[in-house]
Length: 555
Image 1 (tube, rainbow, N blue to C red):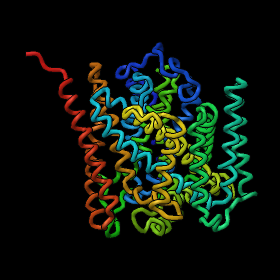
Image 2: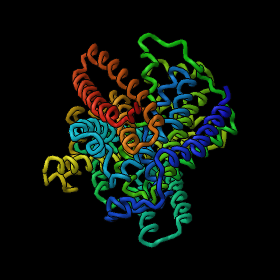
Image 3: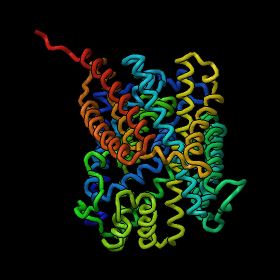
Image 4: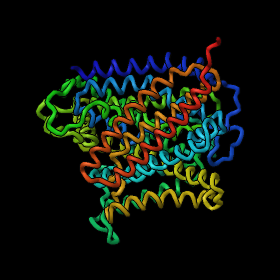
């Protein structure tokens, strides 16, 4: 199978989804109103609520949701064969992810920028809100604790990525000043920012930075994790326009340049996909493709974390409600394109089937390493970049997106503690500094309390990320469906994806529960049961509301 053919078919179908399906959902189902007074305009506090240019906001939304997961998940799932992964990424992006993100933004905009958990309280009841918040908190805890480990690992493995990863913060801060303080032309600011980022990527291999094996009695990865937590805490308290927005925007442009380079290399090399379409030679112990395909590729097809970003930060910056289509749906489509690139790099970036099988000897192999190595090989052959520079470019791409996701994740976790402070009348929790300290403290407690000096404790609960993430997406669509039904609008476009996601996620949770119990992983057993119970109860509460609100046939 030609990688070029898969690329063309995938991009063409996604383009049709944006130009036709998203327009239908926006106009006929959500009925986006350009005259609606959005929370960004109404509140406009200059910190969290800031009316934002839709292109800049798209960059924030896209890079906040496109972390390491849309690369790792597809690059692992191709173990079952490239065809199931390709179909799920393309169709999931069109019919699930785009609708999910756009409708979550719409729901939050219509509720003064409230999070999806708070909206569940007003749309259903307070009990549902409390249960929802538990699932949200656990999901954010996984993302923030684990992405710090992932970024630290990438910087240790590729010292040439350290300079561009941290240098991007300086570039982003300057861009924020240029856009908001000096009112400079966005086009020129964008061009200069992208050039600066790629100049840093070029300088990275010339000036690699590696920490000593131990520093202050801690291993190198633990030191990087601490640096990342401190940075994320500071970034979560700064006004969004100062660092979060410009960092995400410029990273979004950088990703599209990187994707363009990778896609161009694929066209020039025209490699064959050496992996099988459906892998029939699976080793013993390989988990079943159903339902695990749909939770292994969580980000890249649909992701519950997107709903948290959509209703947590993106909705607070929407200038016009109609921008939700471009920011939400096209933002999800950008992640789908990244997942498509991961599939092609992990299946066409190897010379022979034997080379591919050597990497994919067991389930869980491949992942980020297969994406970087495969993509670098294609770029080296197609456009002549050195293997080191190609690997640095792809590593920086992955690290920057994991970093922007972590930035947003810590800010969202701060919101959770503040909402708990409002719910239970704990005034100290309502303070931004205290809530941030609690957010970062809980992540650090998991990282170092469960992982020791290495700080990789988050990896202990990471096996639950995929299922928790997809459950969150299903529950978000369930709340949106309740809102649509109460507004007397068609619900099938959210109801059917919701039912599919909840079914696959619950089946995966039950399958994992058996595995965790057999292996004696008691922490995961407990968390699995908590997530499962909360999700079932939230679903039952929402279904009860749906039944009461469903139009009755006249006698």
